[in-house]
Length: 246
Ligand code: FPP
Image (tube, rainbow, N blue to C red):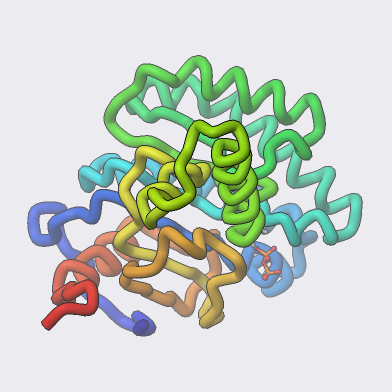
């Protein structure tokens, strides 16, 4: 794991893009506090940063981008903040679907999305359906997401198949679990970026991040820029990945 403090932005051709990038978008609240603004202003600026990052990833040739937008634990925030975040998400989905179509971006959601308010869920389903045939980049929004909960859900699905006689218990291996996660069919993220300096996984993609390179940035999420992304990618490309071998 390493922290990037200073860097020189690279051009696209200098860095080869990871196939799947995961991002913990942290620091919206502190960004707002620093400016004497309400927390929701930080989330709004965070949503704009999401838009920029999706476009930058697409331009770099990244095929999958997974963003931690709302964790299982985030339900414990004050009701007013949860409500404001849901409204922001609805507006984002409504306004950005056209742009996702233009950018050839396919939207997908991972998490216990059945817990989202009906209106938010409806907007989410509509955006997913509208963008389903797009091929340049798949944007996974982690919503009502927890890594442990995901493993619990996969375990339940596997146990159900064993109970029904569809699956032999002796054949269960790593691939069986991988294929029952919310991200089934997608490659694991090879790069995890976390903004605002915390050195924690925060229950994000616990299974999928087993071999990921981790880059921590000392910047709040609303300040994350395309040059931060290219620097993180260049850092990733410079590391030799051995997957435990020599
Ligand atoms: C962490 O900042 C961020 C979140 C809990 C939510 C992320 C949401 C967005 C980026 C905006 C909406 C997203 C979409 C996809 C439209 P924090 O509030 O925990 O910051 P703090 O640690 O400084 O308080």
